[in-house]
Image (cartoon, rainbow, N blue to C red; front, top):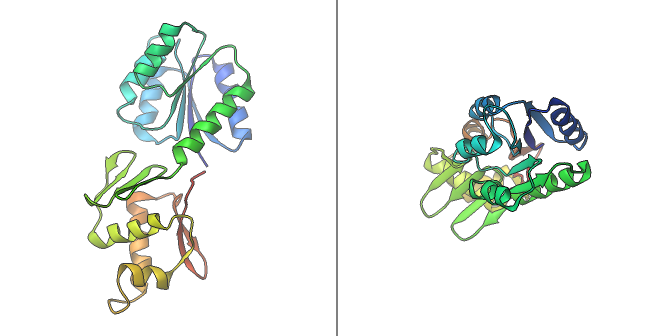
Length: 224
């Protein structure tokens, strides 16, 4: 389930957007000013942020400017401004989209869904695989979650690489063991031990590594 932060000083609008997106199956979090938005972004991870520009004390552009280096999720500006210069400024400081008040709820929902789909799409090449918040770079032996480096052991890295390279495929414990450890090394129970360790470091909510009971595990290709 994608988690969305809504920031708007007009509480009725913020709550309306929250209710509509909740009905669409999203988890929502509402804040009514820029300071509260900065605080929650420090504590929680979001899949998308909807940010009003015209707020007292701290504008949406100021918020975006401060958090853009900390988050890589899509940011949609919502504002009454419709001048080209305002839109260009928004894009320049890191906004991904811009919707002008008044807008239809249907349009906002469509844009949110489009950005979530695009964000969750698997990005892969010979060296790099990105799924949702997690990126693995094989050649440099690096792993990132939300652009933050995560330290893994050699075996954890090889396990994660195998799972992500086969995202969307249910893999038996035997398949995983043979591919990562080799049939003549260790025992199959080590698979579960290393899966537990990966979850602790990268996937505490178990959004990515799913247990397939009676079989093994699957790395989710597209995260809801």
